[in-house]
Image 1 (cartoon, rainbow, N blue to C red):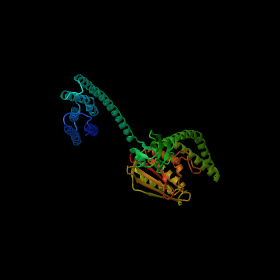
Image 2: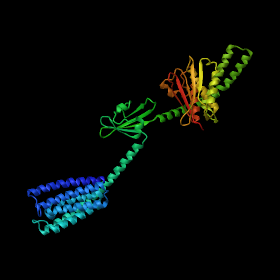
Image 3: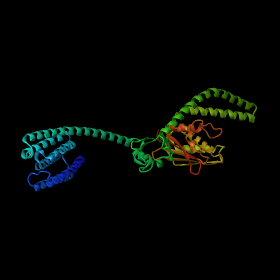
Length: 490
């Protein structure tokens, strides 16, 4: 049974029961003329109620077709006609039962069913008028006028009810389409959407919201968000490092709708763009340095070398060392300014890391104080060996400089589930404050006195040129862990 037919069946039964009970009261009190015996009328009432119950039960157990609905309308008209015939004929008050049947036809099937019900009602009324007449107090002329007026009213009601039903159907279809479109957008939008009641208790969350927040339905808004929830927009920095942007608007019922967007990736992209812009600035600066410094610096180094050959001394050695340090600084600037061009070849990442570690162990500045340990199986990948050695060396140097009292550096080669090749470099140093971690790959940013701030910037540039990524996090027990990931194939 369709919902409309079910509602109509229940309503027709209740209305018919109320009308018939009232009619029984009038008949019993003698205020309503009943044709023939009263017992026949009572039996007719009982039969009418029985028909209503049986048709309702049949419709609940079987699929109600269009033909069944038309048959039900005809049965309702027949029942109303019999009741009218026993309570005054064509002038009976119960002839108004035709109107609910006409309206029901429009409600169930539209204008055509309403016109059909009007036709059934016309036949029923004419049958009653021919069979019984209009009652003892009505003349034949009055019977004609009443019958004609009522037939006209039946069809007018059918047309108006059909028009109203069609308008309601169109409006309902538009509302359903709008609701489906809204629900589809809310269900599929990547942002989390929450709605609350007047007491700020969450009553509904879309799928994206459940992915971001978990199952928070029934909780209070202040327990879910730590930001300024009474502002129109606010930011949420989550403990797991995610960054959310939240906005809200009031609803007519006094509740709120809150939209939560995860902008972590956009924020990271913004930071990478800013880093690239800084590298452009470094390039401009490096070009000027190369032109203004390298030529006189080369002449100065050559002169110092000649002086050392003629008159060797500690002062000359110090000056020559400083000239070489300036030359390396200029080289670092130039290296940071150039977009790295890669010559990828297949190789063993673990073997490259071990060779870098062996070379680092021979550095007299850290030998004896810093222990380098390498772990991991052989792992094949495609990379630029020279560039990657530069990356590993810079990470080793950064780790050693973070341990002025010495310690252990652990290099571990791992393979990620998605196939990426990884290298983790862990130290036991002083660590990096959380508020500074997002800046350590910026050019010229350094926490070490005398540093240029280009080492880690070069590391990030080379890793990204390989199509990889690098992350920094605190190491359990103190220190820092750098994790870089490279695709196994170019």
